[in-house]
Length: 422
Image (cartoon, rainbow, N blue to C red):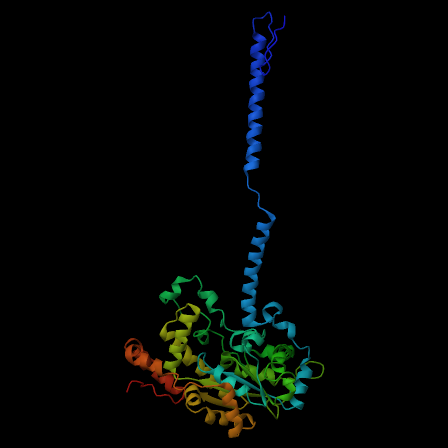
């Protein structure tokens, strides 16, 4: 007999076994109920999870791309299109023989400026390349490198670590403790490296390969040929092509060999050729008082590059670099002129008149006046603050080094008085 149950209650059958079936049904019922609860919890969990909307994703992506765009624009505003294309994108495609012919037939001269970093090479270069018969590289935006130094964007000779100091100093706490030696490269030390002095003799194999000439000139030519100053056709318009890199001070005879390389029409180098009647190169060595120069580099390394170089290493680097320049001066077939920063800043017209006479271009007062008006103010006595620092504290700490290296400094014959605290 079946018993009817109220609506909403579980229907239970009465059997002869005294309710065993009821217990089994209750067990199954509870199991089904548990499953339903678990499913309900999972469903509610899925519902409670927050989904990222398309608008939010778009906003995040827009912010990220904006940040990347700002970074790229910052570097583009400093270094121009070369940060995207590289320097090689503008290379000329001339052969070595085409370059040899063009330079010789048009009597072009390449002026190479070298000397210590922070010695005034940049300000003097700015003045020289402003001359109407001279062409130099454009500014940083046009060349894509700091100070528009050719050594930083060519691939024939090394930069000797210069320009990479910040990368090396970053995250290196020992730098601040002075744990440095002359084995390191870069600004303020590179002249102490072994094999840093490139000459015609020790780099003979490069001077027997005519592609050395074309690689260098094809890279530099676009930056001489077109910039804000000359517009276009700078190679043709200018009598003098000027390239400034401080490291030219240790590369001089090698560079003379490159730019005067005797190239045959088939691209071979005439190893039996006599010295050319006319040198295609001239050299200008810039210098500065050793104390002023050492302090200027010390300041730059600490403030701009986060590094540290021992005072004695800086002084030894100064001495060794000038030794190489003096050696090369005696071995060059090309004309050489020296310029001291102190002379230029105290009397710019006088120094420029001498340099332009050396280059055999117009050096009238009117021409020089126009150049200086365009260059702007030349600050006088750039060593004043360093002399003050030397006399107040430096001489106590490092005065013994001038005694130690007195003979070396005097042998350079730069005309500087080492007794600054009279």
